[in-house]
Amino acid sequence: MDSAIGKSLLVVVSLQTAIAVTALSSSPEAAIAAAAIGVLAIARYGSVSFFASSLGSGAKLGLRTLAGSAWVIGLMALGAAIAAVAVKARPALPWAIAAAVAGPIGMSALAFGTGLGELASARPRRLGGKR
Image 1 (cartoon, rainbow, N blue to C red):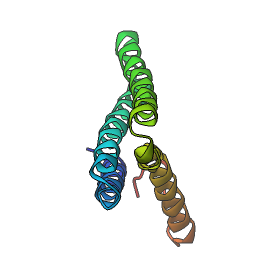
Image 2 (tube, one colour):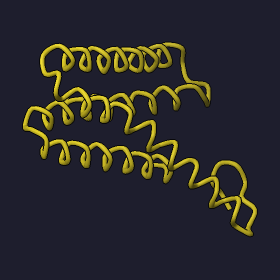
Image 3 (cartoon, rainbow, N blue to C red):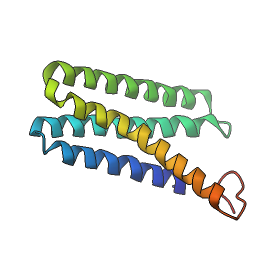
Image 4 (cartoon, rainbow, N blue to C red):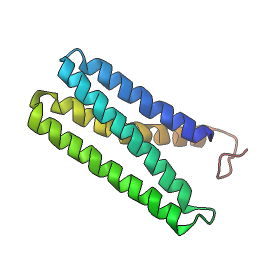
């Protein structure tokens, strides 16, 4: 597993765990909603990684189609789950939304921090993470 993929997966899983545990202080239903959305968000992250890896290195069209379909289905499932929480457990909705946006916000923070670290570094770095 690539170091960047491992770090980003660790960030997403850590954020999802923290949100679900914190939601437990609100109510058990909020924790369940946050955990369920978190699992879907992690699966969607995996499908996005699969799709991104299928774009390069001459991957076959069928593999790209499968990866793209998984990404779209994951996004639709996430939206449907948030809608279900909004209808069935309205007080848990803020926790569900927090779990849904934690991954993109965490990934943006990781990318921003990594970029600032590289800019501050005195050593030049080539694309692809090789020094």
